[in-house]
Structure formats: structure tokens, C-alpha cells
Image 1 (cartoon, helix red, strand yellow):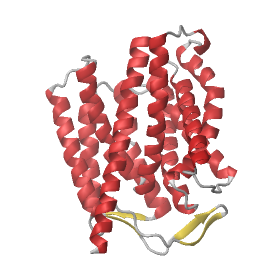
Image 2 (tube, one colour; image 1 turned 180 degrees about the horizontal axis):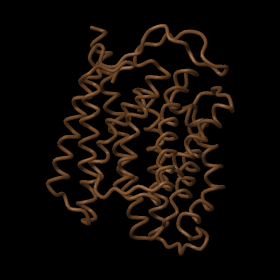
Image 3 (spheres, helix red, strand yellow; image 1 turned 180 degrees about the vertical axis):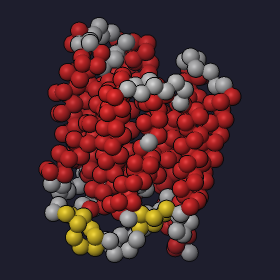
Image 4 (spheres, rainbow, N blue to C red; image 1 turned 90 degrees about the vertical axis):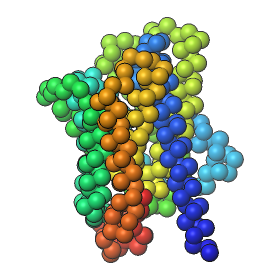
Length: 332
């Protein structure tokens, strides 16, 4: 009797984690779209810095309330994570500027096979044929939804490669650090947010000026734009926390695959609230294919042998790969 109850509780927590991430992620995308398109606040990197400043304040309050317990994480690990995370943020912004929207979307889709490769190489994860095919269905569906014009240039390709690999490494590192140092999502976020906040607040205005030719200190702030900036920062606290929770509970690959549900919601809400892109037959077909792929992935990867780690693998530590793994296989 105890085992089914524990399984049911885990399933409810998993669903809650995904819903938390979907709601906050879609919410922040819609708020940022309104902020940038309607109010002309195009300083994406600086805005991300503000997000992490707000998140840092949240972690300080949580630590004061006793919700975050003292924990240890070497500064070398913190700096490596911050490097990957900041390269991801800047790389995605530069990739969007230098590439066509179609190629930008293709680059984002490449994150799934790249994340799979990281798990295969570093964690010796094995995927069943059904799991591999389900991932391909998701990729095809999202591509049908989002990819239109595709043009490639050398500097855009380089920016896309940096964006894809830094994002995958950052997400993989979230899972890796939580397992290796026995950190929960709050602990890890408490270590990471202050470093990312400080670095992005410092470099953000220069990156944004390089990308847009505009200075953030010369922006004409008004009550509506300040309201949307504040709302974006508050939602970002939930977005950052939910990302750490989801990757910690599952894996970077699962986060990428099922995370494309957010892409579908953004397309639908964009049509409802902004009305600039219609839901034509191609987009609807792509959504249906992607959703079928996600359901298939969830079912295939949860079956025995669908996605598992080989036993007795070298355990990573600060000096390399020594020791042995003892934790259970990750399931979705």
C-alpha cells in the first residue's frame, strides 16, 4: 500500500512542477513580448540581469525564513555554471539578431539531440528505439509549427552553435550539480543567482548597446513600461526556480522535449492576444504532431529500458571521473 501512495505523490509533484514551469515560462514570454513590442524596451540582456537580481532577493528572504538550508558548492563550479548560463543568454540573443527566424528555431531544436549526446557521453544513458522515435516526432512537429524562412551565414552559424551548446551544458549542469552535491533547487539557485545577477547587470547594458544601438539609461521610462518590467522580474523568480526544479527531478533532455509544450502555448496565446500570426493549417498540424510526440516520449521513456543509465559508471568529481555511481536510473 505504501509504494502506490508514494508513486502517486511523486506523479502529482511531477505534474505540479511541469505546470509551474509552463505557466511561469509562457507568462514571462507574453509579458516580455508586450514590453518589447508595445513599449520598445529592447534591452533583453539587461532585463535578464534584473530577473536574477530579483531572484537573488528572493533567495535571501527564503534563507532568512529558513526555507533554504546552508549548503556548500565550490566557487569553481559556480563560475563554470555562470559562464555556461551567460553564454546561453547572450548567444541566443545574438543568434536571433544574426539569423533568420527559421534558422533560429532550427538551432533551438538542435538542443534536444545535443542534450541527448551529453547524457550518452557523460552519463552513459541508453535510449530505447521508441524513445528515440518519439523525440524525432517532437522535433518534426515543432519544426512544422515554427520554421519558415531559413537562411544561414557564417557568423550567425557560429552564434547558434555557441548558443545551443552553452544552453545544453547549463541545463545538464543543473542536474549534475544537484545530484553530485545533494542540493535541492532552492540551494542551487541560492548559489547561482547572485553571480549571474552581478555579471549580467555589469555586461548587460554593453551587450544590449552592441545588439540594438540603444542605451538603457536613455530609455524613456513610463508607468506602463515600469509595471511590465516589474511584472517580468516577479514572474522570472518562478521561471528560474521551476527550471531548476524540473531539471533536478527529471533531466535536461526531458526538460527540452516536454518543454516544447510551452512553444505551442506561446503560439496559441500569441494568436489570441496579439493576432499577428494566424493559426493556419500547417501550424495546427505541427502542434498535433508535437503533442503526440510528447505523449509518446513520456510513455516510452518511463517504460523499463526506455531511458536508463548503465550501472557502475565513473562518478564525476572536481578532479575528474573517479568512484562509482550509486543513484537510481532517471525516469520521466
